[in-house]
Length: 532
Image (tube, rainbow, N blue to C red):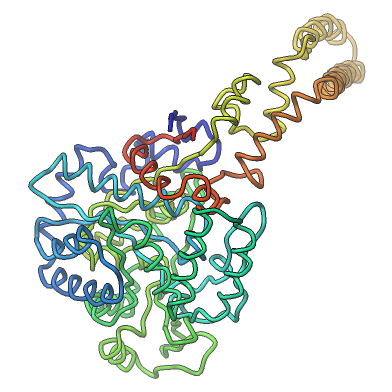
């Protein structure tokens, strides 16, 4: 696959916060630990090695071995799990919701970024080992965000009752989804492989966590990916001291608020606002906030309650699996149980990580390096050739459609659709009128100003009319440009946020992921365009 790149800022699809972070704007320095450059990983290793307890490694390895018992484990993944027991081994982590059949394409890009960064770090620092980790968001409860994927412009959806952590959902009803998927995906060797993959994952596993683990393992086991489900008693036992402090001292709230205020003062949108208590109570069918009502604790919307803080803390210590960190605390939980150096996420994820550095410092946990995941636009050779014939530049294809069309019509029209010279000429004429008007009264001066505005608006209107007429005259070129852009940007958004990997797999089969492994460079810091 030939490849090309474009700066993230030039795509106009990434927030000013993320673009400024990539540009290393100094105003943001206090919101993160180290920037993701190759020279910053060695000091990150040294800091994390000093802080991470040996006991946590032992528990982590035991839990992972248990979670992998029912899977076909590759030698490299098995070796990576064993390596985590050594104090010279560290993780590169990405996380994602349990989207049905991986959800949008960027699920792949996140994991490939983690795999490739781990490999690169091993070459840079041969005395250490680096393990790519996929953190399954099994405790998430936003079912509407994960219960579908897009296929050929249609929504393939799993309909069932909501309630509780999605990882514990049984897979009942997914046989109906398989029927729809099988009908839509078509025939051929690659289509058959996809149908079998869906069936093995979702029909032959009892819950969504197990199904997703199987699916991710099948796609990436050859690359040593380690998949973790942190909804587990022994792992949460390691997090109890942090959760105790949260309940006693409201640590997250007190330390995150200053960061949100700073982000707001710099003109950025705050992604998540902390609560006084940032823990959920987790049961088979519920995941609800714990709230403090006049000194008593209760689970919001339920009859579950504790009359005193002591009773709540007692249950926390006996049954830590019943407590679930919210979006503010989940990153901290991750860094407590993993010897992690770097978190790889999308723009929205990194935006809320920027709120957390002071919180990490308050509980003496090393803040990880934050890396924006790889982003990719995959185009066919035919699409690339068409764009070249239409002289559409790589930057132009990312424009909003009306901007792209206006730019191209102005560019290819044999008429100059630019009335700027006429505007300047008109303004020069009115200068003389203003000189005359200043010798009379204010009413005449206002009349001249109004007339100037009216005539300038008239020129704007004529320019728009001319542009519209030229669009009609050049409708064939306009149609071809919009058609290609609609193919590459479904629903007027980035391809990676809409398409499911199955559409590319049908064309490329098992070569798809190796191609991504070959081309994605996690530290390059640019948007990748691949031509297949």
